[in-house]
Image 1 (cartoon, rainbow, N blue to C red):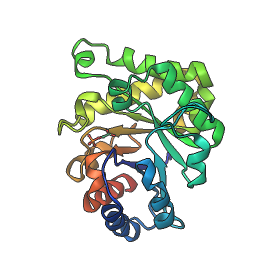
Image 2 (image 1 turned 120 degrees about the horizontal axis):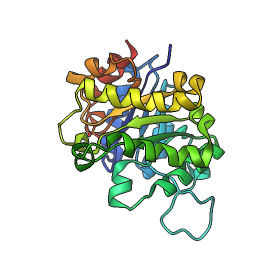
Image 3 (image 1 turned 135 degrees about the vertical axis):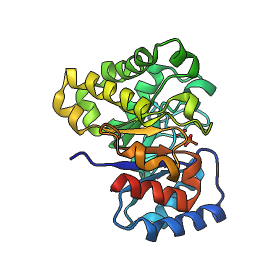
Length: 248
Ligand code: PGA
């Protein structure tokens, strides 16, 4: 069986005090359950100090494709490794749409992350307009193809894919389990055509307004292997319930 993995994407939220309370609540409640929290850069040291030795891994929400140098404001893979990161989100739709990250840049970040030994959580997903014009699969395929062209299909054996329909992120409008499953099956099928073994093992998370109340039916879909959780990852009871639903 494929493993299930739930990751929290804290986005630009938190403070030292809020994070301490959240992590203190998560640690005992998630003992024995693999989970990830992707925290803002300044709080990586805190995540490392609080979570070392627990079943919760930590990571970042973005990374530079460059190794080092005159790139003001950027953070490199080796810096993430210095703070014990295991995962890094690449290509989140907010990075793509608000900060102009192209498929090619996202692929470069994915390559850099893997070269450093980090596991990229590669986000893909269509906008509302794209869904309504019937190009969901074409958009997701294009986003995946950029990474496959840069790193090869085998690279996906060391990555996580997160399907996040943009229209479902932070809107309270979750994709129905059937809508999500259809795209997850498309993604797995597309990878399977290139390498069935890689496809079978690939963890494909769903993201977009997942909460405790809808987690169980999403996680029960055959091709949904966990979630990438935004808003609900900031509420300990919600995040714990989602992680437990996935682990069932
Ligand atoms: P949401 O965000 O759970 O708040 O919709 C998901 C994400 O953007 O990763």
